[in-house]
Structure formats: C-alpha cells, structure tokens
Image 1 (spheres, helix red, strand yellow):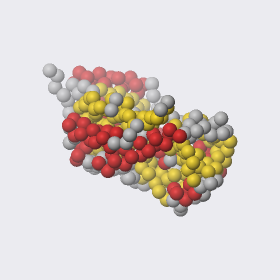
Image 2 (cartoon, rainbow, N blue to C red; image 1 turned 180 degrees about the vertical axis):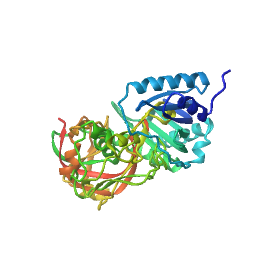
Image 3 (cartoon, rainbow, N blue to C red; image 1 turned 135 degrees about the vertical axis):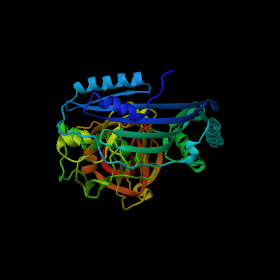
Image 4 (cartoon, one colour; image 1 turned 90 degrees about the horizontal axis):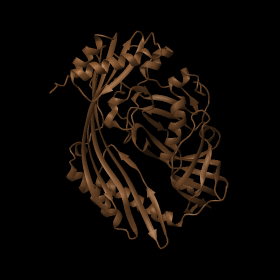
Length: 454
C-alpha cells in the first residue's frame, strides 16, 4: 500500500520542476441525517481530505488537485499543474505570500464531535417541534454538522492552518388544508447550532407554510418592496460582489471606479474579518494572507477593489486578503483554485426597526424568499419569482403572495430607490450550498419597484 506523503514533501516535489509552489490541504468530517415523509431515514458520516497544488513556472500560475496523498499521485498532480500553467496568462510580478502565523476560525466543540446518534437526535427534535403543529408534513429535511481543518504551505515559507465548524439545515415543510397544500423551503446555516436555533427555525418554517395557504397573486404594478436580508445579500453578491473584484476591473468588466458615488449616501459597507455567524470568519484568507477590515463603500462612495494575490500583482497593488477557494462546499475546498471573492460584507445599520419599515408602507411587498435570487453582474438586472412573501397595505401585512415576480436593477435600487433600512441586521450565507461568502445585512426597503402579477 502506498504511503501518504506529508504536505511538505509534496511541496518539495513541485519545487523541483516549478519556480515556486503552494500546497493547500484540507480535511473535513461531516455527519448528515435526513427526514423523509415525517420519519428519520438515514444518517451518513463522511470524511473527505485532499490537497490543491498551485505552481508558478515561467511566470504563469497553474493549479491541480488530488484526494490521493501517495507519491505517484503527487507526481501526477505536479505534472497536471505545470500543464495548466502553460495555458494561463503571464504574470511577471506574482509571488506567493510569505508571512507565516497560525490562523484560527470559529470552532464549536459540539459540532466538531458530533456523531450520527447526536445528529439523528437533533433532527428528531426539530421534526418533533414542527409536527407538534397540526396539518403540517415534512416530505424531506436534512441536517448536516461539519468540521473542517486546513493548512497552507508554500515556497516563501508560509505555514498557516485554520479550522471551522458549520451546521446546515434545509427543512422542506408542507402545510395542508382540504384541496390545497403549500410548501416552504427555509434554508439556514450556522457556525454554531443549539436547541434554540432549531426551535426558532421550526416556528418560522411552520408559520411561513401556514401563511402560504392564504397566498394571493398581486396585480402588476409598482410597489414599495422590503427585502429580507438573505435576498438583499444574494442580489448584492451577484452584482457588486462581482464588479468590485480586481479581476473584473482588469478584464474591463467593472462598471465602478473608486471615488465615485454608486449608492445612496446612507449606505456604508465593509468586508470584515469576523461577522456574527459569518461563514468566512477566519484570520487569514485561503491563500494565507492575513486579513484586516476592508472599507468598500463609505456614505455611498466606492472606496476600492478587493483582490487575491494573483490579480493584485497584475494590477501592481497589494492583495486585500480576499483569496477564496471557489468551491460550492467546504468538503472539497482543496479541489478549487484561489480566486478573488468577498468574505463577510457588513452593512452599517439603519435608523428604524423592521416594524417601522412595515408600518410606513402604503402599498408594498415584503419578500422573504425568491426561487433563485439571481442578477446580472454587468447590468444589475434581475427577474425573480417570489416563493415566500407578503402583501403590505396601510402599514399592515394583509396576506401571503404567490405567482408574482419582482424585477429591476440592483444598481438602481441601491443608488436611486432606497427608501430606508433597518437597525436589525441578520447573518446570511449567499448560497444555499456554499460557505464562500456571507453578510451581515439589514432589511432594505426600496420604492417604485416593478412587480409582475395578474
């Protein structure tokens, strides 16, 4: 049986053929459980590990990865990375980060030590809380606890390690009455998970499913629209989170320039090291660069682009600590190359409560969740179907909304149509399957937003 190589030896193999190299290794243990037709039916324990290799050869960077730490696999991975580098763009000034220090991350010992029995029990507790309400069913729900550890070593002497814990729950709940049913998917992700978290989510999911039974289609027209923080975060990351990257600026795609006013003057945003339950609350980014708070917008004025080391060197600037492994899940972080992305974007709080936002709404739509909160990064345009929302009239929530579509431009909303935003801010993850980027975001209300209905 082939002997596994430590990452230091994999690095030395790469250095024999490349000018310099970096090895990113990660290992993840996850425990999952599922509810199917109101009953727990499966528990899965999964262990995943591997390494990603970046090489710098002939002024070009290449990447390859493997889940096999044997010498034969490492040699093949080096060859693949070198081949990849030959097809990449030239970067004369690139260097791997050199600073070295032990990293850190949020760590929940209960999640890290969770076994199948605990996850089954916790999901069973959630199921019991949901089903204590009559006329509610759970066709499918999943709960996963994961603990990830990573280490980065490179030719410049960097040796950084970090770790984090995550909980992800996706309840699919159906509320029924004669001749009709309404379904709600209410995804939540945490860095820590407690019975209180599960209680709150059970109450929220059942409430949304029951309220959806009275849903009606809105008439087409312009409305005041309040977005739940998760929806605002997704739209923000799909647009501003793309065009503020140093990569898009170099590629000529970015529509913004530092020093220009691009948002309402009440808005300030920073990319923070830590955010409450923030998925990217690590001391370093994922190429080992130590992070510091990064102002992005101050009083509506765009301050600076964010970058990893590769694109920063192309632009002749210092990296901002935004090198991210662009994976859809952290189980295989090692399988993804580094690219520039936001970590935890934190909005300044507003000056009114969510209740005041609602009470000040004459005719509006409160959007909790759309089917797929997508937007075009260049134009900012979006057209998203409302899956969970409420019609607001005269400062009161009247009924749930169905078969309605909200559309417009994200850039226009934040620049020209902002009515107000809340003191309350919520931690959110921008993708249902990803721990790449998160935010700490208020409830935003925009005016004159087009809603297509009946």
